[in-house]
Length: 306
Image 1: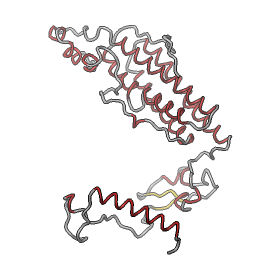
Image 2: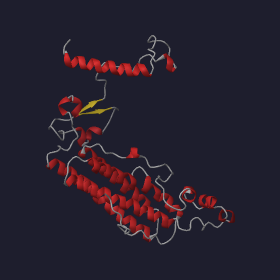
Image 3: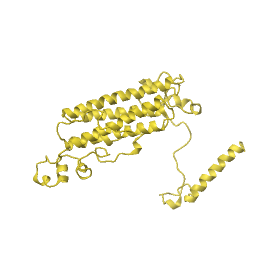
Image 4: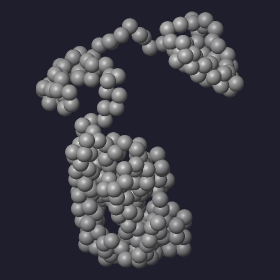
């Protein structure tokens, strides 16, 4: 259950309207690394966390804070859009709000679609996408994604910060910069805690026993004269397993070549017939193939070696 209070987490008090800057601020709301993304990412991770206690509580605390950050920026945008685009001087624009929006540099959808308010989109009007979020159920993998999300969010906030001279806007963004700085550290400290509690060795290495040895400790270089060998990533020992890292030219490691089978004739792909006739298929055939694969696997389990 979530409760709402009317008080914002921090002040959002621009000194004057600025429709052009509001269009830029949209990126920090609904862009790939905007507040909507980290909000949804952390909430989904928290709701799906299977460890009751400090981990789940930490994720949901930060996710809930991000709800407030979305609210702050949406409120800021409504205030930046106050009176816009009436400041545009042309008489034609004064009689046509949509035209005034274009001439004044405002995102025209702020005038047409939302009536002078924020949208769940990026700065180009592309709708926010649930595909932006990462919530895998693996806390190590998720926390690493969270560090990257906060870093990208902070980087974009720093860039947008330099696009305004409004003291009130700068004050709000200074707060957001600080929160992004600390959130990066919270997720990194979360990884340290996972290691300390014995949940991971710091690398996502599920099914490590199934890995091939050499590819798991080799840097492959694919151009002549590469200086990549000078980096720590190409020498010394691996972070886990204490294995010697190798630097090797990128060559074919098997005898396979890039070829595909003859196409289904009912799909009308361009084909020269060099691989013989293709196998015609349909939806029923796909289901049949899936059932055949399942039966084959069951047989292997019941009668191994036959």
